[in-house]
Length: 82
Image (cartoon, rainbow, N blue to C red; front, side):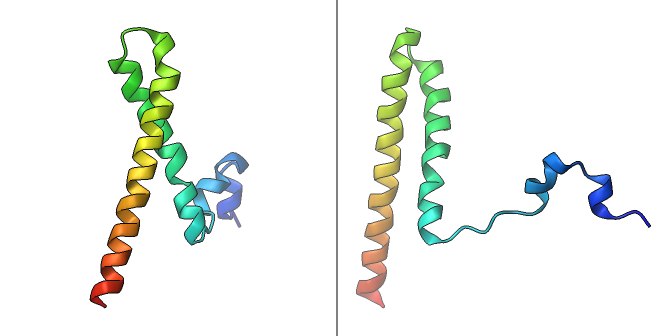
């Protein structure tokens, strides 16, 4: 009998069995997502390639801190209305 694990290579096992993450780990997953988006965006927008690292880190920090501020604001609004 052929099983599912025999068909799929071991390298794809993580894609088929997702990792369980908790509440604070969700917030940490925002950083690599924002960093990758800001690197691509600043690579397109900056005139000199030497400007990209600082500009992308600044943009990433701005996005992450803004998202956390919006999250805290919505949470406080929820507590106020609940």
